[in-house]
Length: 188
Image (tube, rainbow, N blue to C red):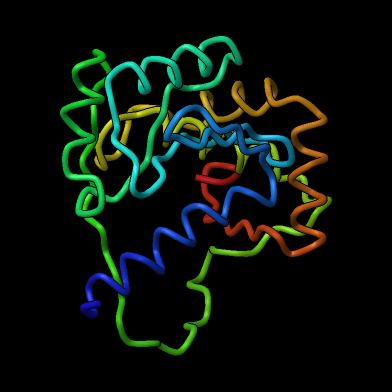
């Protein structure tokens, strides 16, 4: 196994393990759909290794995601599943190809920059931090979006209490860490 193959195997293992602390895993053909149970954010479906990936399988996963009311989302490493992009696109779902960035040298943990802080479980900025993430991940690309403090505050009011409680529990147990930069009266 080459160094690149070994790295991709480690990453595949992580991408499968990471959601399991807060999601139920449903097997749908060659895919595993992670359904959020302990986190206030949705997860994705991902392919297993060694199985052919067909359009009908992708469509079954998408149908299940629609039935659950969760985003129709798939995540995979292109080098491990080179034909999957065309298969997913054939179902009408768009694909965002993002580069896989890997830092191969450990760096010392830097001090947080001024204006950035970690949130504690009962922090008043918790809802606004989730709102910022939802707005940011809901917008395409990496450019600064048009949403501002008003949209953040409106979205924060819409986050349900059980979701915030689950996030607070994850922060308390250190299963999750949330860092925020603040401006305009809250997280940005």
